Length: 102
Image 1 (tube, helix red, strand yellow):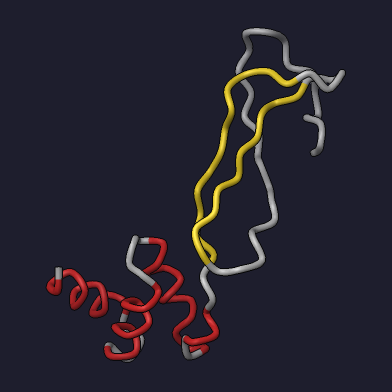
Image 2 (spheres, rainbow, N blue to C red; image 1 turned 180 degrees about the vertical axis):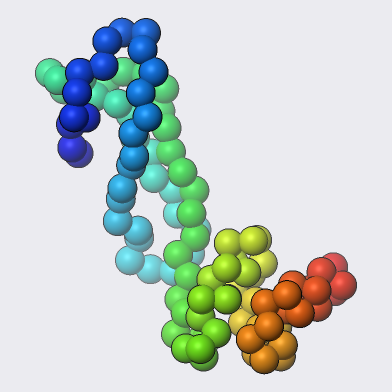
């Protein structure tokens, strides 16, 4: 945990960034946290995020960025990998093919 750069008065709004290390294995994950005051007292609502760690080892290296983008759009790793290879790297065609299969 890193303290914010400035004190934020009560009732004020402040934007901040959370950085965390992902889980070491592929799958769905969740990180939860709460804000902590200068004396260690937790306050405010619990916050969190859900994320998926994907293992791109099974994806040809030249297609990894496009497969990552497709997974971010909600497609499974398997369908994204199969369709991007079938579409010869054309992400638009891969999305079209997956959308027509639904």
